[in-house]
Length: 283
Image 1: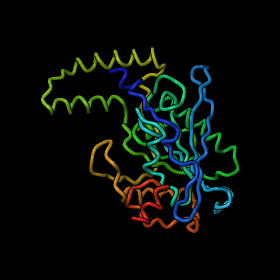
Image 2 (image 1 turned 60 degrees about the vertical axis):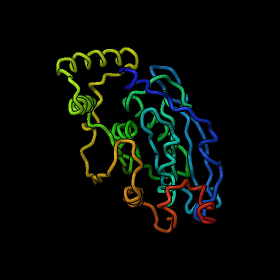
Image 3 (image 1 turned 90 degrees about the vertical axis):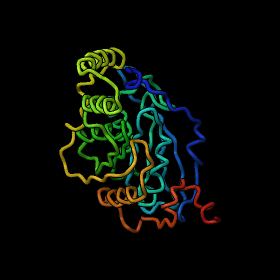
Image 4 (image 1 turned 45 degrees about the horizontal axis):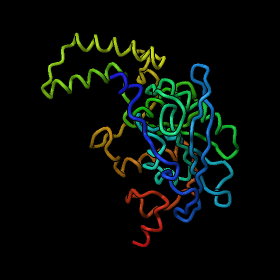
């Protein structure tokens, strides 16, 4: 059970699965730049593997463009950003995705459901702020990534906006919801047993991953304005196009994007990767 929290199955992939390093999308030419930044975990330097999708220099509508950092869920990696690439690139923003420490091709052995992953985001934000081609920065996270976005934004007021997809409110509530679901399915789960197991899990996580589950309460880290959109499906269901459209409009507003930068995407509802545009046209 502890491994489900701090060491779920690690996503494995090859770099070429990230897609082509150059491609055309809606009349604009893009490239993917892979890079790494260094982060510290208990004094140990670790490499954080990242990718940046952006227009090539000749096709940039402005010298500095807004950037959306996508944060994946647990047991996942930066490949997950493929699901929002088409939506975000068509708004005129660029996209950065990373393998959080302990995930994908990055260093590290454990995840922390957002607790230390916020330090990963801080390192990427600092890197982006050091280059002249990035203006405003927003975050889009799913599951663990959504929690990470909330925890980082709480201490970085310069983040222009957040798209938070399926974050848990706090870990205790999450466990009790899972237990209640089990009871509804007919399982007998005594409350005392839950308390004992939670105490043991908390101790094991603190010993192995060096963070206290009691301190992981994302709901305490945001109290601002929000727009809630409910969708059908479960935690991992594909998100509907109307949600992506709403997120795109929101990002255009909070990232202060010029409408002239926007790309007309006639195949937005096709849910295909942006470099598959030509095959959609032929079909």
